[in-house]
Amino acid sequence: MTAIWKQDTSLDRLNGWSPDTMMEALGIRFTAVGDDWLQGTMPVDRRTHQPYGLLHGGASVVLAETLGSTAAMLTLDPAQEAAVGLDINANHIRGVRSGIVVGTARKVHIGRSTQVWEIRIETETGELVCISRITMAVIPSRVVGLK
Image (cartoon, rainbow, N blue to C red):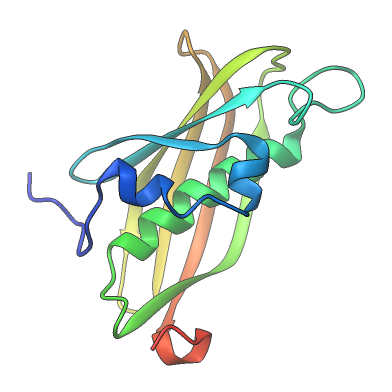
């Protein structure tokens, strides 16, 4: 399979974007990248719990958006284009109290003006926790000040 990425996908580079962001605050880390998928982890602890001691659904959405939007951005030439979120949804399947969750973003559609990514969030043992889908708009990079 041919890789879909147009940018450097080294984990050091991707994780280097985390300081002073929500990703750093929640402990999100990029952990693996394939030809057409991106994976990351997030701890389930006091930073990501809701009052019942379970993984907060919003934290799952943050992980999903981080993975999907980063993957979308990596398929573009940043001198020309940027990806911005249009819609995200999430179905929360299983509660988790501790450990680490693993999210994997896979492309559903990569078009000229939109992209759709599916993000599966699972426990370390592979149990489905959340399934999410994000739709990204592809816009000129000058619109978001990247050029």
